[in-house]
Length: 112
Length: 119
Image 1 (cartoon, chains in turn orange, red):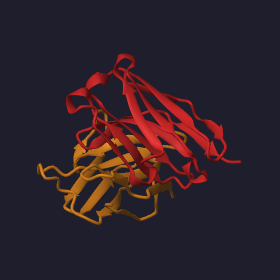
Image 2 (cartoon, rainbow over the protein chains, first blue to last red):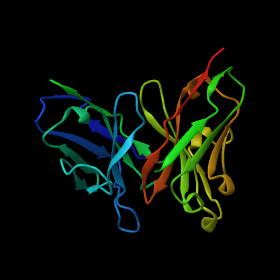
Image 3 (cartoon, rainbow over the protein chains, first blue to last red):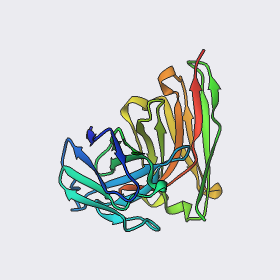
């Protein structure tokens, strides 16, 4: 199985600040079709996860351009700029390239 | 508006069974690849099962550790997907989410349903 390793486990940020979350996979996430199925999700307190970014760098419908994804192969990064209160929660990376689909353990974003 | 609503959770004793349902609306269910994902008490997300659409002969995939105990199914006439869980174990205690897979990512999630396996 592809192991997804997220760092850091938690992050403290001031409102208006910028943060980066790293996600590394144990195998390349490049699919046979050339696509890289790495996505990012945010789980706000008391809610189900919601899709933020798909295929490394594509923002899902309605997602602010303050969120950006980058990376390739096995190393990926989510950046959040101008952090707002509604951004707080747990961020997960996930891969849809290979069965079984797997997720990172999460990064908790908190206010400093 | 897209909606996925899971039902059927609850408290069950080890060894017993439970069937989860997920009723959907707001998208073309018949062509959707539907999945079940669970979130453990430790907040870890674990993919469980997927059922593809009719054009792919309703092909099914499972996480190896639940194969033989869990069965995913769908009813396109009701825009619903199901998860039959047999021989439940305490480690199956989790929140279970119904999700849609779209080209390698999960774009819509239900609100989740709690399953507790305990004697």
